[in-house]
Image (cartoon, rainbow, N blue to C red; front, top):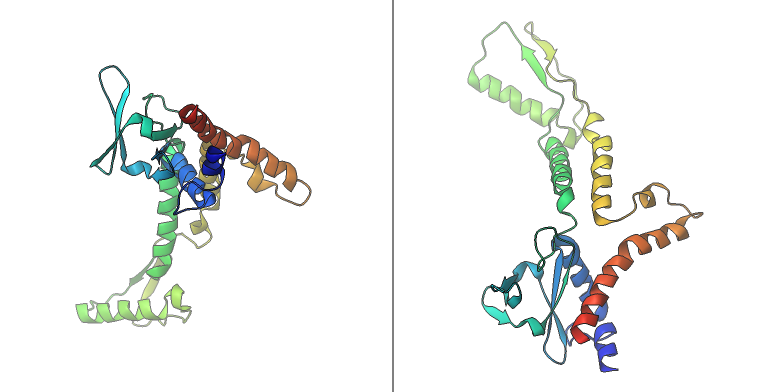
Length: 237
């Protein structure tokens, strides 16, 4: 009864079981490992980024080092790990195969944001037969940024005189900056790495939402829960 309460309702005096489990699953997904310290009465979550696993020459775990200065014995730690092809002690994040896709998505979104923040528009070259001084050119550029900045809604026309002409420099338009196809492609790779069926995001409606939720549970949630349950069963026998 005490173990049932500890694992399902009251892991420690600082957290409820819902927030406690969310931290465990987040660590498991992001790092491939989650660590819990059992002090004999309560369970405490140890952030996996701060835990180092030490082994000795007999290929067994000798201790866990937390935050670089606190040692825990193997019998004090409940270690849940994801699959790994390099180590029997430490798991690998399932997001590792999708790292490049995540970085590309971040860069695309950052480019879009900077594009509008800087007031960038499809490039133009203004040509004139006259030689303009630096002060005049700087003033013209400042006026251009102020009057034609898309982020401020600038749409005023440019009046060209003195035989000044406009030549297009770039064919980029705002629709091409949406990256819709690339975003969808990278999202699919990330979903597959996490084990989430991509069909769930493409066919959600009232007619099939129940089987989709069931599919998500069977392929994504239950495998994660099984890992955690197996760790508890092994530790508490």
